[in-house]
Image (cartoon, rainbow, N blue to C red):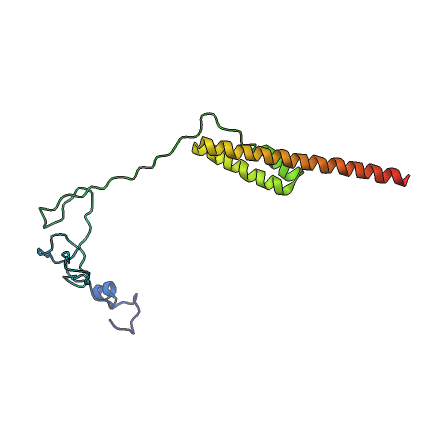
Length: 174
């Protein structure tokens, strides 16, 4: 490879383009002394370092599909890969009330901190309904309802107190 030439310049051979100055990997070699391809023999004497044999990399290629045998090893059993199965519950048939609209109302109109907490519990109840978890849905729904009622009570109390204050202040000025 001539460094004065650019990679796209005419005059480069296909060998120079493919290797780009790197050595090719070592050729595949079969090692009949190893019963399992890609693994060294077991060292049962102690905790010594593993002895890897063969060329520089020492690994065999993986089989391309399930149920194939390793080439050159007729006594090795076939490998079968099983798919992973995830078990999920379906959404609840009769979902628990999540009080989401009530939570948004109390968040915007009554008491902001309790409205935020009620909104979080409402969303948690909705997610538990979709996940099929009846117990968690009921618990989150109950807490959202309690927080919404408290927030509404605080909001109404503040509105009533502010009306009374305005009436008292305005009547004392006249």
